[in-house]
Length: 502
Image (cartoon, rainbow, N blue to C red; front, side, top):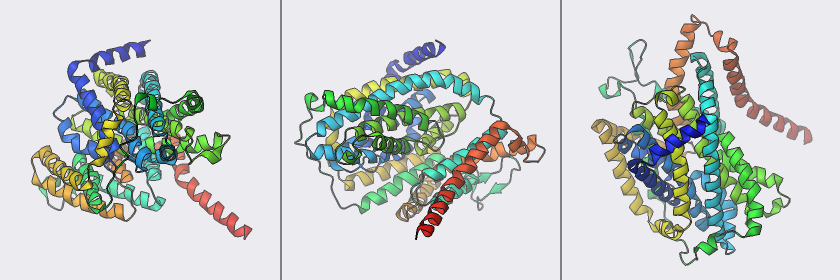
């Protein structure tokens, strides 16, 4: 009952005119960004971090959160109509959504994605309201030792979400940890990796780093693109065409329920997120299906499950951020940077020290999902028009936002230079097949790791034994070790089996 009362108090906060307008802006902007191929929520939220400073913390997180899960609604549109994912987590929507559109069922495909996302969003919001307080209370028992082990676990998961070989993901994790050490050591007062540059004494700013990594590098990638995205706008998107029939609902209902549960669980894990949840849901539905051969040819189950899973994971990933101070993925990591810029430290005390922020953000998910279903069903034809914006116009606009945003953080041209340099380096890394998400997550977790590791060693009088004598810490370290070693052991076993067979 307390959770329901707190959720109602959060609704009262969100229904204030200013916060309601902010939620609407986040929903509209998130949908538009999701539809536009390539930009994505990480780059957009990075660009808007300087703007969020002008808002109060609750309104700022409502805006950034709305952009995040709003992009998941809109990201499916480009996937279904063009087979070009508007957002990374919408890749799975291409598998069966595009074949549905090719067979004349584009309206049903767009409709089921909106309804599946709405169902998952509403269910997960109430689940967060029920689980969040318990999660936060349990997190209060986490001391420096337990937090160190949890961060180590988060780093191993971050390395496992990167694309490509694991060694490349670990290189990105190591680079992120290295960048987190730039600045003045809070314990000794010594400068580290500043090279005598005064502007680096305070370290690298997360917003500057994120804008360079995901903004400027995206501009360079957009400049390479030669093809124009031209959807078939003559397709009918009337409300009647968007409504699935009884057979569609029968096939989609259980995948939506399973995807919601799976996404909620995966979103709680550091390193988890919408992309992993959508792929996991697709694999699960294909294995459970009586007709797996229909997947990839327009199976509506292969669309409903992943769409509910990615939205559920996006929203549940706010629990480890707000309750533990651990970003679950790159997007949540950028939002965490926005909170830190506001002077709000996410963690176990947040729900008690800033209840209006915690419950306001949770309640905004109810309002945001209601706005998104209203936007995405009747106005799909309007949003599809955004796909006509050529990359040649998008690239300069993104670059201008990056430069203005970087300068506005501390009125320093040095930050602008860091954004540009970081952008070119990130462009090179992306062209070489390196995923930037593990780097950003490691950068954010690096400071937490160093602080808690040092405090834990102080408590143990310099001995690391305390990290294995604490039951909670030992469990997380064992899981982290298994996360690192099991994939390697699996590949070695597969290699030996193949050699023996030959």
